[in-house]
Image 1: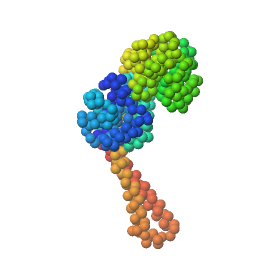
Image 2: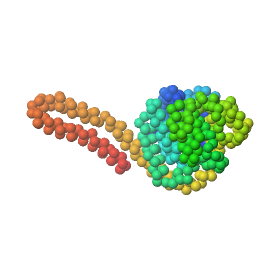
Image 3: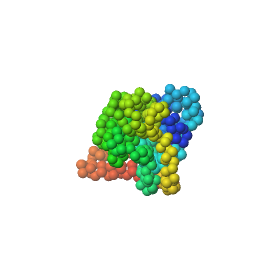
Image 4: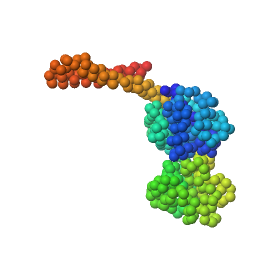
Amino acid sequence: MLNSFHIIAFTHRNLEVSEVGKLHIETDNQFDRLNILKNEMQLSELMFLSTCNRVEYLFCSDQGLTTGFLTNFFQKLYPNFSLAEVESLVEASQVFTGILAIEHILQVASSIDSMIVGEREIITQVRNAFELSKKLGLTGDFIRLVMRHTVETAKRVYTETSIATKPVSVVALAYHTLREMDIALDARVLIVGAGTTNTNMGRFLRKHGYKNFTVFNRTLSKAESLAKDLHGNAFPLTELKKFNKGFDIIITCTGAENHVITHEIYEQLLQNETSKKVVIDIAIPNDLDKTIVDSHNLVHISVDHLQKISDQNLKERSKEISHVSDILSEALFEFQQLHRLRKVEIAMREVPMMVKDIKSTALNHVFKNEMQGLNDDSREVLEKIISYMEKKYMSVPMLMAKEILLKN
């Protein structure tokens, strides 16, 4: 199974961030689109990971990842893409197979493959992506094993190294950029989207003294939950185009595939005010129509802008990468052992049932007459002995097989 495990990855390293954003699939659409892909491509397991600057596909398949396979893969998953767009994806694809795929996902969850090294958010994003794919019935035993080991390894990295010191996450970078503008703490803050990133951003601002929040989200209950934490107001996303109380700061990060803040909506939000505004757009693809930036008095803080700042901060954390790499090398070896042991467990799943069948045949057929001739006390003792031996027959071979694997 290990050699049948593959990852196709798109990050800021091999594709423009805006292009990565086009590969995002909204949660509500994932079940249909990913199930079609899994069935038509004959994938035994599939997991979809999407963050603000990364989209990855983890799957199990005995097929080789040829150009033809990749072309078919993207055409089925993104039927609206042109042939030229598909060919561009095939050419840009980073492909990992077998143990190299395991190494890659360990690096991702441990943040050393992130745009911002040491960004803790990625471990939560990886875990949540797995849980959603599992809920949708896409994953199986192998990806479960991979994810469990990946999350455990990432936790160890963040505990045993200083890779995450001097926070430089998207949230922290956006806040520090905002703070440098010396904006008043009573500024009117509109938060569009109530996902993990905006929730963290809102709580960060609240912690540092900001107090005037209005939250918009597609699911009203999530907006209300965040607004409650921030002592603000909550509205469904559909009400954004009607909001008439003005703003000083917009923080937007949704999973929408198209612009959430169009020219028309921005003009409505502006309410004819002429003071300089701040829009922190950390969504991929961008929630704000970028042409608005050229025609209005505003400061636009995007993921691309934050990436430039993060490049300077990476130097502070680079010295920890060697330590992290040592942990990942050890974790990679451990996974190979876990995989071998799991193969033994799967191969021996039928042993307990076979032993039970032998026991049943012996008691009810082969030695049926003899059993009937025993008194109750003798029969009870015999059954205890047989049950004890039954357990040992199931456990001893498993332990021996594990010991042999570990020694080798």
